[in-house]
Length: 80
Image 1 (spheres, rainbow, N blue to C red):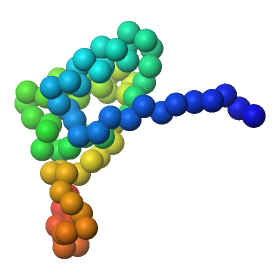
Image 2 (spheres, rainbow, N blue to C red):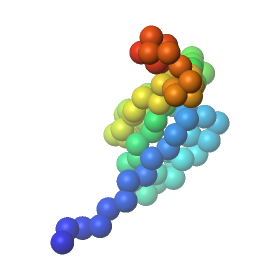
Image 3 (cartoon, rainbow, N blue to C red):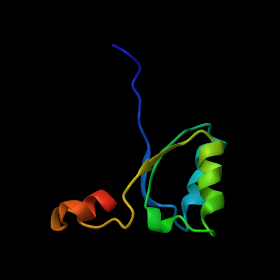
Image 4 (tube, rainbow, N blue to C red):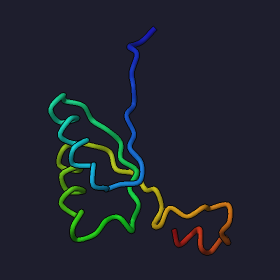
């Protein structure tokens, strides 16, 4: 039996608490996976995303607007 592991994932960012989360993770040598919403990535939050990348955290796509995909047409889902 291998080591037990925990994966930490964070959704809907970057947000006003992302830097606090990064501070805690970085202070403890922990990497996280961040699911980002495209519309939340702005010139204001760009430095947070750069910090996530430089810190070795994994970034994933949580769509452009975080719409309810089950209510959208296929072409809109592709755009997301």
